[in-house]
Picture 1 (cartoon, rainbow, N blue to C red):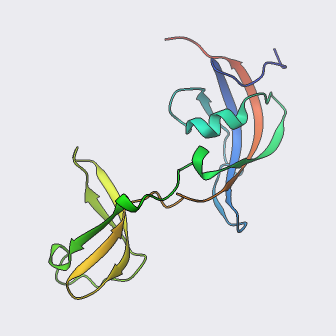
Picture 2 (cartoon, helix red, strand yellow):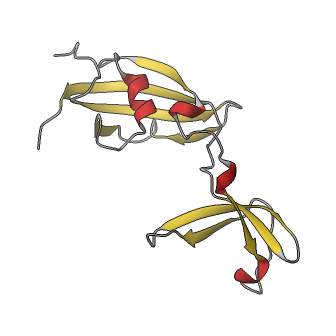
Length: 149
């Protein structure tokens, strides 16, 4: 089964690194134990999974993930203006600071301060990797038929 290729219905064990177009590495497990996932289980974004299709155990590859296949393009609707008094009075604001907000379901939603003045703060709720082309470097250790539950 060593020639089983990654596709729907497979379980994959791999090492990976995620690298920005400027060469900076933002995540990697090459110095750790390999990770395993079943295609379609939600562990990886669908665009990352599709990029792996056709690879098999023993393969190493560097795959380009365009924004549309990764974290999407920035959306202007995700820029929100919030009254300055909604932030703690003692908060020293700086552009680029990350704050946690509650979303409609009560979950945690990070936002990045883009601009601010005495009255208002513009917060960007886009994913930090939105609009970025990424290199997804992988070493495939095992591909097997996923067990159905």
